[in-house]
Length: 209
Image (spheres, helix red, strand yellow):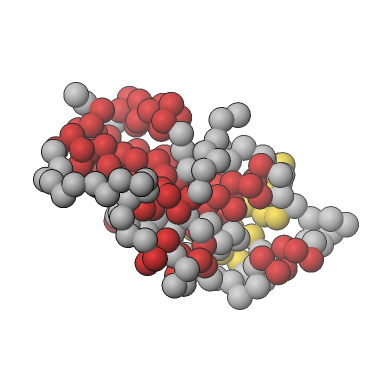
């Protein structure tokens, strides 16, 4: 399976803003945006006004980098959103938010979406009491996400990862049970609750040409 293997901080520098891809490091002075604001590469880019196409491409790349999705899979999400009734951009963001790895991140079970993807890949989570190791699995209202238990209790590393829950505000479309270390999907995510700062309208314009 193809995946991005370069440094995550290069993606933030390419976009020019924090995408919070490295968890706690993004909130510290070690953040790449704080240390080196210019884009990656040896050459210093010339300052010039970005075209409409460049702005649309930047927004599409920003969404891809934020959710850790490669180009072909992102295009499939867009086609899926375009076929559904409603506003295409809003549906696209809802689909991205409904990924299992993103839900694990939103529930504060992981420090970043990349870490959440790895945990899901390794089979550490169950959805509706069924083992699920597909990060792109789209959750539905009523789904319950739980940690995989060993002999009736969660392993020690899970207790370390989840210490101090919730580490971030949990959106209202999710319900977190701190004591049981479980999460429930109350509804589909609303676009007003998605705090990634992505302008889906520009993405729709990019793919509409």
